[in-house]
Length: 256
Image (cartoon, rainbow, N blue to C red; front, side, top):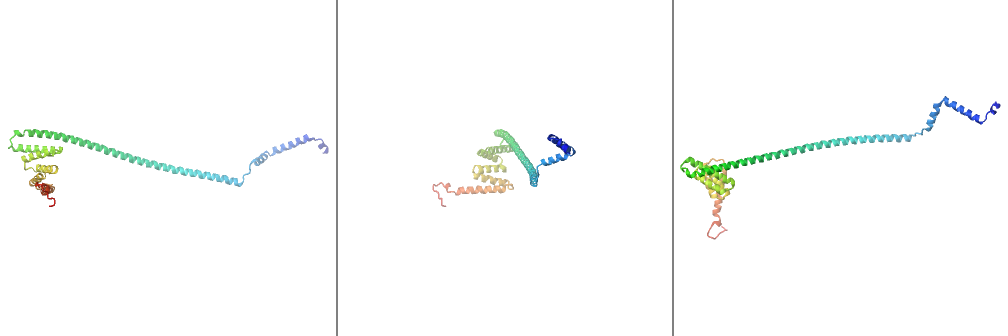
């Protein structure tokens, strides 16, 4: 044995050791690598695991919070859209109503213009015919009752035409001529009284012909109103008679 050992040098010893190590690895190579991997892994302590768990929980909470906010904002956006849609519908309805009213007004204005134009044409035609009839008055028999009635209507119509034009004095003249031709016509008496009292301040004429109107038409629907006009005319005439300014002696007694 001692002789055998003496026969090995240092190189031979290292070679033998290497062979033994190789045989050991060949017998259980997984264990060696597992051990090396275990040695290479860092140690995971309890504190590190808790921190990672806390971070995951915080991350999950943040995701849920963002999802909740997103849902809330989505609902608010839908509500705003709905509100805007309602406002727009209301605005469109109001605009349509306004357009309809404007169209109706324009249509009404157009109708009034047409009616006014037709009235003017009718008035002009009536005036022409009336003037034609009045022009023939001198050639007709004044005792012809039918002609007198037609002539009275002509004067009455001319009085109405002048009244519409605001020519009140000329209207009164025409009504006077109509009354002279047909003194029993209550409407002519009324028109003469009304224009004289309301537009010319002639209360004496108004009083006289209002009284004639009620005498000829005592059951008139406006009898009470005409009676008030008669009372007003009487009061106006009395105040005029009692006024010291109407005394023409030059001395006004303002104390009586």
